[in-house]
Amino acid sequence: MKVEGFVQDKDGEPIVGATVLIEGTNMGTVTDVDGRFVMSASKEDKLVVSYIGMKGTKVKVASKVTITLKDE
Image 1 (cartoon, rainbow, N blue to C red):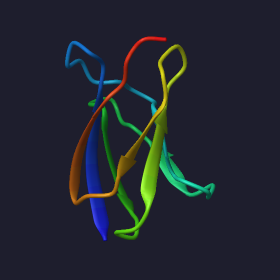
Image 2: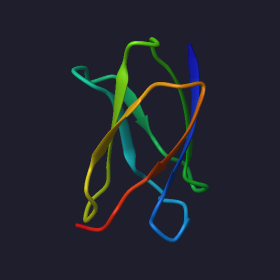
Image 3: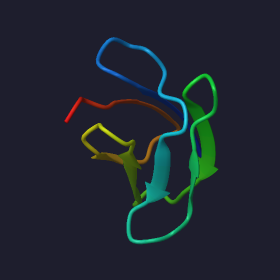
Image 4: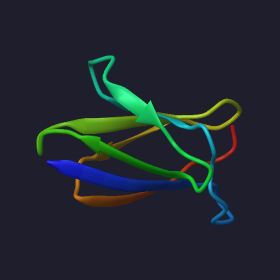
């Protein structure tokens, strides 16, 4: 399925260059200048999202996801 996402900080600002991977694989992408990404994944997959200086997180795959990363 196609996954469209947005990665933001606690203030709602986009995070540029965050890494978005499918858990257990090396398949993934990085967010663009607007904090957005598009990738393919299975419904059963989880996305692992990380960025330097912020706590990583895991989220279930959905067609549209908004992910908020918190400071470490």
